[in-house]
Length: 232
Image 1 (cartoon, rainbow, N blue to C red):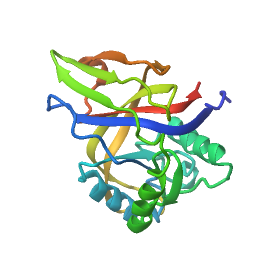
Image 2 (cartoon, rainbow, N blue to C red; image 1 turned 135 degrees about the vertical axis):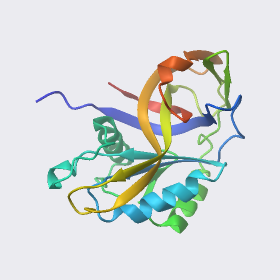
Image 3 (tube, rainbow, N blue to C red; image 1 turned 90 degrees about the vertical axis):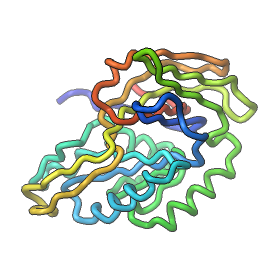
Image 4 (cartoon, helix red, strand yellow; image 1 turned 45 degrees about the vertical axis):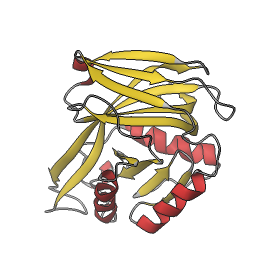
């Protein structure tokens, strides 16, 4: 058995996203919404639908992170990544609870709610924005000359260091599920994280990262997150 990936996560200091067909990012977001979901979970389709609605809100960065711990139930999730499971457990560890379930939404890296409860998600957004560090750091994205440029600005008093991650997203991914609790259904997953790329460490000063377009793959959109914590 291989070593289990360990991820320790604290506050989300900054985030931005850009469609790769555009030249620059939209306005600064008010929240990062991470949905931990599974093709083998019968409770998840309503949450997947809600995530699709949230993904259409330009003030939100909404992402689907399919997990793999329900694969033993009879259907191996075709989009799941062990990193997503480790990330979800890392959030639970940081909160000091054992709340790891599907469908679970984590808002701004801090508060978890039931993924199908849109009202609870909105309340969690308001709650997390009371923390001065949440999304307090400006990040600018630009696409030109076959590369993505990421500019992370100088820290304010609330944020001081973290890691800079790029998430490659597929906008809409329909999946026909052949076995398990969702047998016979075709479910569309929205803003699915297909790849994680660590761009580097951020230590409080302004920093620029350049990513060749061909290293991102076939993603429709990329999101960049600056977050406290570490992973290995």
